[in-house]
Amino acid sequence: MANTTSAKKATRKIARRAAVNRNRKSRVRTYLRKVEEAIATGDQAAATAALKAAEPELMRAAQKGVVHKNTASRKVSRLAARVKSISA
Image (cartoon, rainbow, N blue to C red; front, top):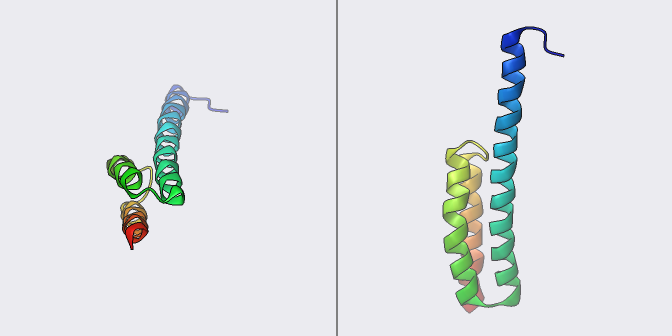
């Protein structure tokens, strides 16, 4: 348990930040799931719309440090390729 005042404050800050990050990560997963579901149904219009909504959310999470920038880019790239392959 934290003893000093600064250590107690640090644990409060960490808890707040963790809660924010947890919400961001959950939001990203929700958007990704919507894209996955649209791809599974084979509806390209819905999949494209879901991807357009998910991409800024993923990049925002990367900017905030919730996920790594390269991870976000890789996920967007792979999802875009899968959405594109629906029509083919």
